[in-house]
Image (cartoon, rainbow, N blue to C red; front, top):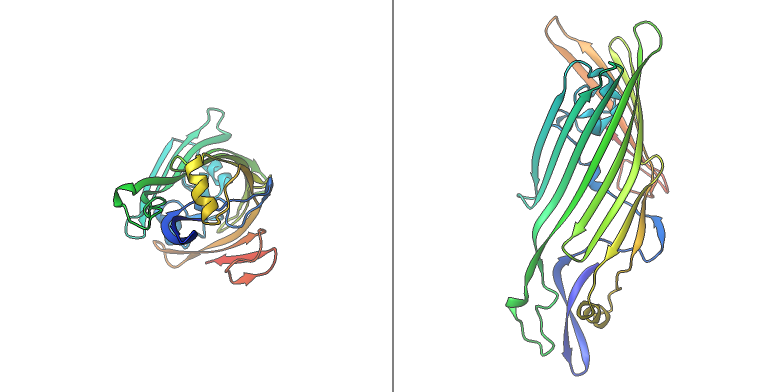
Length: 294
């Protein structure tokens, strides 16, 4: 929802667009939202992102807490720490990833803690830039930040299957916090489930994100002065709501091709299957869309 300034001219209001952009608001009590929690789909780690985010099968380091928690089961000897910082849109958007992997003493399970943050700072708030008499007062411009956080707790365990093959299982419990200035914030929670089958030179991975549906409870702090601007410019006044994130299924397969004794070629193909409606993807239907990653 774009906030606008208001000018009274001959008892009529003329609306001027501003640069302030708030999160989309659903007036219904609870409903599925397309691209909900999309910051969780950016990626993690230079290796995974350089492979076009095709990682659910081949991932083998601590970033598995993000890509496929089941793969954490292979980290048994020592803890791992993974850190990443990236910037987007000429530094406007900042993305941070931190991950700590802790093999448990029973040598059967692995625990991981992951923190993600995506933020845009110094967003101009120009709601009151234009005065009722039509004059412009630049001193009324303020700034705010919009940030999305996610904290993931991962647990993985290995289960022997048949000779030369093993099966790993993993789950994520995630807590989400989103905030835009002092105007709005949201708390959310959800779960992911994953499996990884490891063969001689191949791996199969399946990740079910938001398998139980992720809930985000939005609350708004809009004072009377803002409400008057919204009303005068015919904008909807945000109200507290619950945003639902639909489940997402990502199967993937990788194969390690030997070239010589020192060089291998690792190839992987994943299919990002979403169920929140038609998206701009290779396969786009309603409600299922499929985005391949190779």
